[in-house]
Amino acid sequence: MVDLSKSFLLFGKYSFDGIEVVDPSLKPYIDLNPIYMPHSAGRHVKKQLGKANVNIVERLINKLMRGGTGDKISGKVIRTKGRLQGKKQKVSEVVKNAFDIVHTRTKQNPIQVLVKAIENSAPCEDVTRVSMGGVSYQVAVDISATRRLDLALRNIALASLMGCFNKKKTLAQALADEIMFTADGDIQKSYAVKKKNEIERMARSAR
Image 1 (cartoon, rainbow, N blue to C red):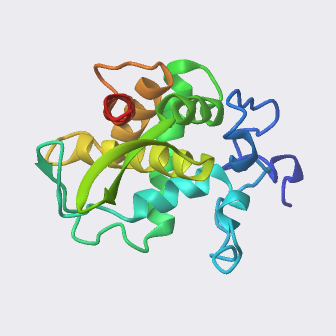
Image 2: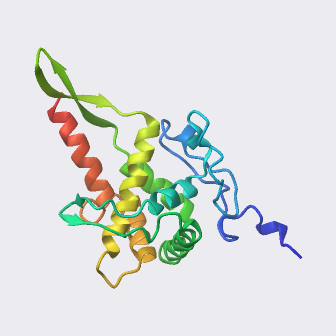
């Protein structure tokens, strides 16, 4: 018999009840609807701003599935050779194991820890290049809430890939470490927080 009491717990373990989003601009775009398995089968792709209705844990999984870019990131070339692309069940298991590690170490709901990490790593300003009279220069611009969320998730995912690349640490362990460091706002250990500060520093200098 199916245990209906667990049907709205993430992975049958973690509740979405009581999860708090402090950042008012991110709150409408962080979907926290109760779900057992974060898999929407891409039903949002043809809808404008459809990603806002995708569970935040699934969005993290989707970012991890992109794998390595093959580009040089923070002095390292990260290539996963497609081992994660399209492997949603495999990556879901990685996130599940990472959440177990976060819960064991922090004694907190890992969904809340993830939301806190996103808030701490979402930049508010960026720079864009404009041309006028044949001269190009950079100006500071505000970032939309949807892009802030995308950048935060992308940097957390990239940090996880870099944390386990050519190391004994597993992807789940690297992801758990990055989520916890970012949630704590650790500038020294969190790649996502460093990238946020770097982006905002460039924007301040371009004002």
